[in-house]
Length: 357
Image (cartoon, rainbow, N blue to C red; front, side):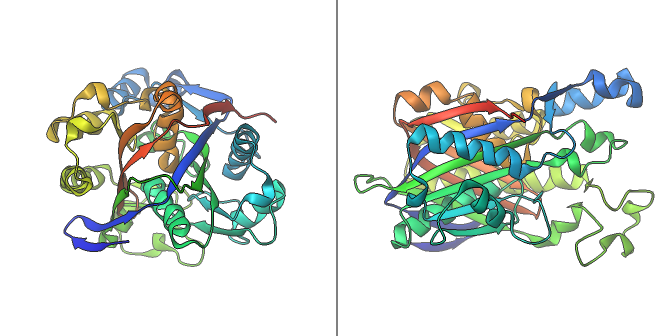
């Protein structure tokens, strides 16, 4: 694996592994924009929606967690692939809405899924940038020879941490859980290229102020006055500025690092942050919009799950049919960002399911 420092992050590459399948699980409770009209007013909702582009989103019911929907995605994926549970070498849960402060949600899911004691299990606390980070970690573990099969559970139930009276977040976010299967592939000759970066100086601009062991709401940050410290706070203008500064060079650097031209990619998958931002980024990078799938209108901003959700929604027929060249770009909370350029498919399983109680 090569390592090169660049202004937009660290360049990394892996080989010898592949994505075998992806399953996304959605809650069954669909929330339309009409749900918010009584509280915020019809005109106010229309104004927000015009910018973010969300028409519907799915929220979990009371008592249902990210782990619950990821569990059902994992069961469906294992069944579809025909993988025996004793063949799973690592289980990684990537989310910012875990079940507990402790134990790690990966450990509890490990037990629910009946995985072996020799199967590694641990959590990663990442949000918007999570999916390429998780792919890099899983594929790198495979490249080292430490493991041969990895399950990546990536998802968030942001509806549990938003303030229903804060229209900037309540209207934007949806819930989803996904699981991706990675495996060793002796005949996979193409490298997978990653760019990973962080700027922690912006961490306070997207935050739940009352933390596990530190209370940021007690700081001198005047923006938090009259805000519920137990709910998600987002400084939208700061997040937008960060995204416009980091993501355009991330796109160009990722494509250049991969050794390909933009026209060689079948699709460019962006974290579904908001519609205006997505269109602006694609235009600035001169990407053809017919290869930039967007589904934020149907599912909202699903945080860590948005890219695998795109794969199971907009790209499923293509990924089932043939080998596909993808570029992925994710960015947000942390500040953290990540990208990947890789070949995917044909996949054995790529589908979206509804959560069943």
